[in-house]
Structures are given as structure tokens and as C-alpha cells.
Length: 140
Image (cartoon, rainbow, N blue to C red; front, side, top):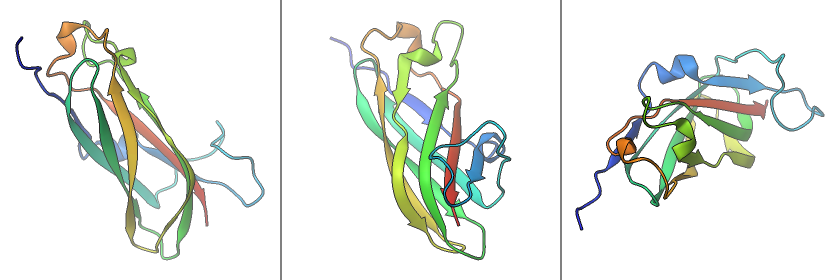
């Protein structure tokens, strides 16, 4: 049996432009809504390697707070894009974060998210790079 080729997921510097982070007012429903604007206070980045069909790994997301006051992170959603014509985004599952995590003023925290490559993923997914869109929300 041949050794599985690692799959690399990387969130490049341009990922910050793709990540939409929103802050909600106290008392608002949990989760982002379509009308919320992107908030410049949060920056999300991360990387996971070593995925192959059937494998589970951890995507460690670094959540940086650029604001001068702390933010209570309430959730992170991840949308997986198409890696190639032969490797659809549905070949990869990334579970988001739901809970409460205090991000200090001008500080950062790391949030682990489980990532799983489906067993039935096409062979073309070996070595593929999947674009990820991260969205986070929280409260001041």
C-alpha cells in the first residue's frame, strides 16, 4: 500500500480579506446575520497539514483582536471552497466553534477546529489546497 500524500490547507495573508468578522450587540441572537458588516477588529488565520481521505486533523485558528478592548468570541464558521475541478469542497468537513472565549485587547487566542477528509474523497484531492472562508462573531 502506498503512503498517502499529505494534503495541505493554508490560509494565506489574503485570507484576512476573505475572513468576515462581525460583532453583535448584547441580547442579539447567537450567530451572524446577513446584514452585519465585517469588523476590522478580528483577524483569523490558520493552517492544517497531513490530510488524506479518511483522516482527521486539527485546524488551529489564530484569532487576533486589534481593538483596544477585549472581545468575547461567540463563534467561528468555516466555508470550504473547491480545491480543483476534480476535488470539490464537500470532500472536506471543518466543524466550527460555538461557545465563549475572551480575546484580550490587542491580543490573540488559538481555537482548535476539527477537520476531516471524507473517506470517499477523490484521488485528485491528494496534495490539494482548499480555499477556506472564515467568519467569526462576538461581543464587546
